[in-house]
Length: 137
Image (cartoon, rainbow, N blue to C red):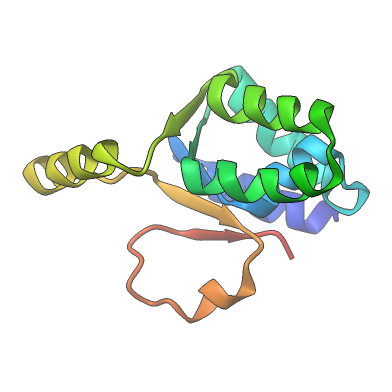
């Protein structure tokens, strides 16, 4: 696990905004042991303000599926607080905010995030992304 943490730490150099896919958020909130050292490193940088975590309503919705199925109100609350009101975390809705973001990106040639943290191996085939994908495994 240490080698992976070093690789992610290297990728984080110079990154100001990091989009958090569903898996890393779940691993962090639920304390998944396999990924905990890596999540500790990433979320420590977010808490410090070195990196801003960016999440969306899609991430939020995906994180809530299993807690709702289990009726785990405490876990639902933890996800809600962490995603929508986390320290140095920006929650971006998908509706009108997405259109505003697209307009700003087009006008100023800026991105929504500098890197994308994921564990979704299916994304490895996407070559059109202009930001680094950070893999957790």
